[in-house]
View (tube, rainbow, N blue to C red):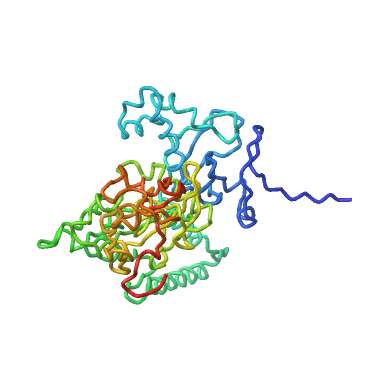
Length: 461
């Protein structure tokens, strides 16, 4: 009786330390191969931001290699770029409270984090999933780039074309000469074949030749995804008489999409509609140089949306769908936390033990282009144009600046909670609970529903 080999079962990643990873979808399990792929070694409780999407070991583009000091660790050595950024932000937050690192600047902390000077202080926050070691970034590893992957693909295609079978004859020079002539004729015919590239306006690609690169104008969308340095430069770059105020994004180029749950912003053309005086880092949240997303706010937003398996949100005013990106600016609008659910698109979260909702308002509604709001009590216009785009506020932006005493009344007995001439110290104080001096009811009295505003477009809530 012949025994059939058993099918290899999927390893969930539980090592000797007993660490367990979240259960994967059947599609992810089917795509995982321990020989050609690896699992993300993200150690945080929020888990992999890409849902434990397998990492191709042959071309781990956009990934970061880490090392565990436990030689028997089997939890993998690669992390997705987004996952590593979130984990590094967690470690940096721990380093801020450690000894001599408190006096370091943010730039010094990042420079020293993975060296002996900083890692000796922060290693306690670098526990591995194996529970027997600590992770550390591999500074000697050079990650492959997208150009390397393209070169490998081109080389494979070239090898396939060169591996065509040829006719071999013995003692017949005539046949060999005919074969050579036939091959030369075929090569000459194939060199004139044209294939359309990228539609009818993008030109044609001739086999054996390099594709022509399109010239792009000097705008926000073009500077956000600049062509390679060895390619031909656009004739519009550096043209006299052009406005240079839009060059704010020229040094903040983005690479191709990382292929994860959240998209990579390729350009900043959506901000072209803003006034010129608002196209700067004071009104638009940008990535700090060398600190790509290393902060708790970005990690909180992306992990919350990843838990919902969603890369989009919606404006609570106009209900327009908003795409969420993996780096700042996170969206064409702004996020905010509120104790009440203004719309169904607001996601419930727990922040400092309090029930909150993560909501968003699009740039058009903040600027007053899409929806204009006026107070139903005093007819004062709500203005959100001063808010920073692409980030998150930790309070309800509609309650931060009460316009009349009606917005300071108790939600139960409608008595005045604080006098109109008395202002609280912080904007976030208006989103917290207060006790009514008349009835004693404790509630978020100053956070009113959106129905307390009148829309100028006459649409109902």
